[in-house]
Length: 278
Image (cartoon, rainbow, N blue to C red; front, side, top):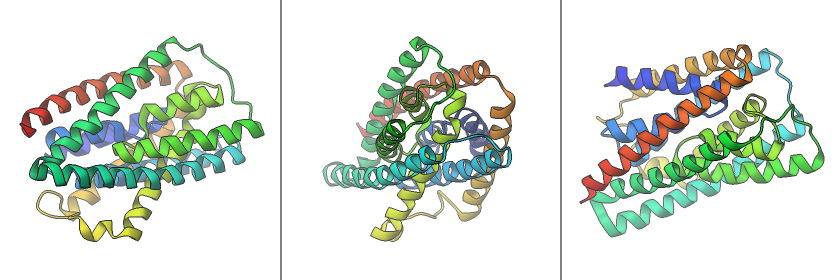
């Protein structure tokens, strides 16, 4: 099963880094569907893989000297960090509420909530991105920078609550806010992904989330986690190369294909976990 997870992570992070999606939007539903891990372990594993992918991809972008607007980048990072902390508090509240009501079935309910919210968001994202008109290069301004901060704050909340790293939702919102195309927002989207996950891990460390939840056990052994993170790094590096070499149209096609795959995965997970909870 680990081999399957590694292949999925490689594909997800490569496609995610190419389009600025993070990869967690694929990793999370697949782990929900196939892994015996708890909801916390799945969220943690997805976050670690997404963080590793985003960091490696951003480093590759910097070495490629990809142009970016520094104030917008800083605003995106700060907004994502603030939203990431808030999103983790919301996830913890939902997890505790579900645990008090359903006990052992809490994990199934959490997965149903996460997959339902994500599926609805992705349908809206797909409709908007297919109907929108292509826009040109991002033209930075003070107003745009403020909008980027606010947008990334909201995206940070969504990404950490859903455990997906942001995914196509980041790209869609940033295309709308920055008034540009998919390829142009990749750097800012990956920056949002990375700082949202850093915020999530920071919050867990400060509030004792790592000690109150089981991270490593027979369902998630340390060496398996290391292998999955390494696969995410490789995927992130490959995705950064593809983003530079592919045209905007090719990047858009990959983006739409990933959304379609993830919507199907989420529908499967909703049905599967609903049956499990009964």
